[in-house]
Amino acid sequence: MEKIKLNRKWCKGCGLCIEICPKNVYDREAKVSTKGFKEIIVKNPDLCNQCQLCELLCPDLAITIEKTKKDAKVNK
Ligand code: SF4
Ligand code: SF4
Image (tube, rainbow, N blue to C red; front, side):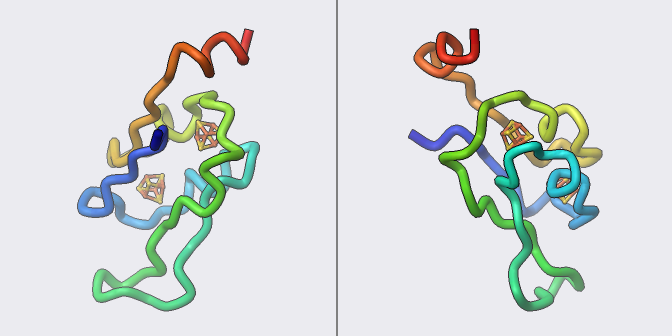
Protein backbone atom coordinates (compact mmCIF):
# COMPACT_ATOMS: atom_id res chain seq x y z
CA MET A 1 0.00 0.00 0.00
CA GLU A 2 1.31 3.43 -0.86
CA LYS A 3 2.19 5.40 2.26
CA ILE A 4 3.64 8.55 0.73
CA LYS A 5 1.42 10.82 -1.33
CA LEU A 6 3.18 13.60 -3.21
CA ASN A 7 0.91 16.17 -4.83
CA ARG A 8 2.94 17.37 -7.78
CA LYS A 9 0.46 20.12 -8.57
CA TRP A 10 1.29 21.82 -5.26
CA CYS A 11 5.03 21.08 -5.11
CA LYS A 12 7.27 24.01 -6.02
CA GLY A 13 10.49 22.00 -5.95
CA CYS A 14 12.13 23.72 -2.95
CA GLY A 15 13.92 20.48 -2.06
CA LEU A 16 13.28 20.65 1.70
CA CYS A 17 11.88 17.13 1.68
CA ILE A 18 15.08 15.80 0.11
CA GLU A 19 17.20 17.64 2.68
CA ILE A 20 15.21 16.66 5.74
CA CYS A 21 14.37 13.01 5.03
CA PRO A 22 16.64 10.78 7.14
CA LYS A 23 16.03 7.81 4.87
CA ASN A 24 16.81 9.33 1.47
CA VAL A 25 13.34 8.56 0.21
CA TYR A 26 13.16 11.51 -2.19
CA ASP A 27 15.15 12.44 -5.26
CA ARG A 28 14.75 14.63 -8.32
CA GLU A 29 13.95 13.84 -11.92
CA ALA A 30 16.96 14.05 -14.21
CA LYS A 31 15.49 16.75 -16.41
CA VAL A 32 13.86 20.11 -15.78
CA SER A 33 10.10 19.95 -16.27
CA THR A 34 7.81 22.54 -17.85
CA LYS A 35 7.41 23.97 -14.33
CA GLY A 36 11.04 25.10 -14.49
CA PHE A 37 12.66 22.72 -11.99
CA LYS A 38 13.60 19.08 -11.63
CA GLU A 39 10.51 17.53 -10.10
CA ILE A 40 10.62 15.53 -6.90
CA ILE A 41 10.19 11.76 -7.07
CA VAL A 42 9.54 9.21 -4.33
CA LYS A 43 12.53 7.07 -5.16
CA ASN A 44 12.73 4.72 -2.17
CA PRO A 45 9.26 4.49 -0.61
CA ASP A 46 10.09 1.22 1.14
CA LEU A 47 12.75 2.98 3.25
CA CYS A 48 10.24 5.42 4.78
CA ASN A 49 9.90 5.09 8.57
CA GLN A 50 6.85 7.40 8.64
CA CYS A 51 8.56 10.01 10.84
CA GLN A 52 6.41 12.64 9.06
CA LEU A 53 9.18 15.27 8.99
CA CYS A 54 8.64 15.85 5.29
CA GLU A 55 4.91 16.23 5.73
CA LEU A 56 5.38 18.73 8.56
CA LEU A 57 8.03 20.81 6.82
CA CYS A 58 6.77 20.96 3.25
CA PRO A 59 5.80 24.64 2.85
CA ASP A 60 3.26 23.79 0.17
CA LEU A 61 1.51 20.96 2.03
CA ALA A 62 2.25 18.72 -0.94
CA ILE A 63 3.12 15.62 1.10
CA THR A 64 0.83 13.30 3.01
CA ILE A 65 2.17 10.35 4.99
CA GLU A 66 -0.40 7.68 5.64
CA LYS A 67 0.32 5.82 8.84
CA THR A 68 -0.75 2.22 8.98
CA LYS A 69 -1.44 0.29 12.19
CA LYS A 70 1.17 -2.26 11.27
CA ASP A 71 3.85 0.40 10.74
CA ALA A 72 2.84 2.28 13.88
CA LYS A 73 3.59 -0.84 15.92
CA VAL A 74 6.97 -1.26 14.24
CA ASN A 75 7.92 2.30 15.23
CA LYS A 76 7.28 1.72 18.95
S1 SF4 B 1 9.22 20.18 0.51
FE1 SF4 B 1 7.24 20.15 -0.56
S2 SF4 B 1 7.32 21.85 -2.02
FE2 SF4 B 1 9.43 21.43 -1.35
S3 SF4 B 1 10.22 20.00 -2.89
FE3 SF4 B 1 9.40 18.76 -1.23
S4 SF4 B 1 7.27 18.29 -1.81
FE4 SF4 B 1 7.97 20.00 -3.09
S1 SF4 C 1 8.05 10.37 6.66
FE1 SF4 C 1 10.22 10.63 7.26
S2 SF4 C 1 11.28 8.84 6.36
FE2 SF4 C 1 9.28 9.00 5.35
S3 SF4 C 1 9.66 10.19 3.48
FE3 SF4 C 1 9.05 11.65 5.11
S4 SF4 C 1 10.93 12.37 6.07
FE4 SF4 C 1 11.42 10.52 4.88
